[in-house]
Image (cartoon, rainbow, N blue to C red; front, top):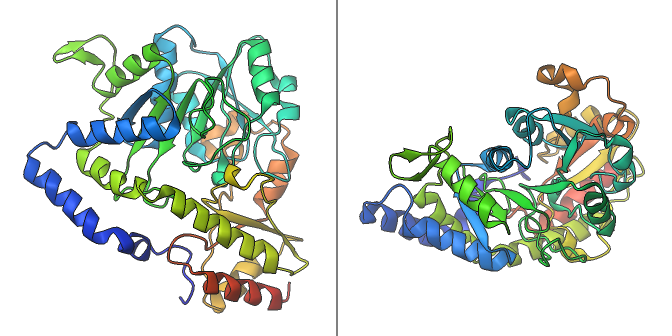
Amino acid sequence: MRYPFLDLGKANAPYIEDLVKAATRVIDSGRYIGGDEVATLESRLSEYLDAPYIIGVSNGLDALRLILKAYVELGRLAPGDEVIYPANTYVASVLAISDAGLKPVPVDIDEDTLNLDFNLIEASISPLTRAIMPVHLYGRITWGNALKDIAQRHGLLIIEDCAQALGAQSSSRGLYNSCMAGALGDAGALSFYPTKNVGALGDAGAVVTHDPDLARTVRALANYGSDRRYHNIYLGYNCRLDPIQAAMLCIKLDHIDRENESRRHRAKIYNDNITNPRIILPAMAAVPSEAVWHQYVVRVKEGQRDNFRRQLDNMGVGTDIHYATPPHRQPCYKSLADYNLPVTDRVADQLVSLPIATGTSDNDIHEIAHIINQLSL
């Protein structure tokens, strides 16, 4: 394929020597759980996100699970409480809610941003609602004074799913004065899955918070529920971050702002050059720093998605779909099937992700845009 959707070999090539050195350093250290590598990553993320507490964990789903479980242990949430989330998201957002014994409540999305529609939140708030989980999907900030106002008036926690938006900066400050995605609300979950803008060479994640009690509880839950060796205060898990992944992530973290800026540049090339009338382009953020373009997602009109992808594949252009089946249409969530979510259901049949990651050059983007403009749809 001439223009693959994502080539992780190419994405990691600029850092390969440093990654090998980092891996070798960890191997030679003899410390393979916890230790200085994990502490260093946590410290660097704390400084970068302007948040005092970071806990490295096993993956992004576990980060969300641990946050919600910790709030249950602290009495801030209880089984049966409701958590509002955007209907257009990856299923992990909802799995974490269910796993904590909480009830997921989907709310439809804004058609321009494809993220949570703040105007629809209050209609879904009930006496059991205790939290809102905004998802910064595709790398675009989902934040604003309207969200903060709703949460404060109703006494709701804000728990960010920041699996796709590390490095995005809001033009509106968060609850604790940070502007960084993941540190805007009461707690945030990060994912370092290999495909992310900052990707590990395996699974990895982190919890972000300004709350020392939540941080202590999450750290204990992630380590078998123990606050010290052989002293288990919670029914916990094994959700620790491997030091070899932490060491590699520190290498990637050095380049995050440059990576995100290059993605913004490539997204603008797409938006400036795709003119096919059957393609709906993503809205550019009014403030560029609010989007880091983990995915560049277009919409294909009039049931032409499969044809569009097939023609691109024949021309050597790789594509993907994020996400073809929203959680409320998954077999495991039949309980959510009756929610009325017209925008999410409509766009789910239109979404197509185009190549944008490192390894796709500016010239490639121009060529892909030219190919798209020649397609008959």
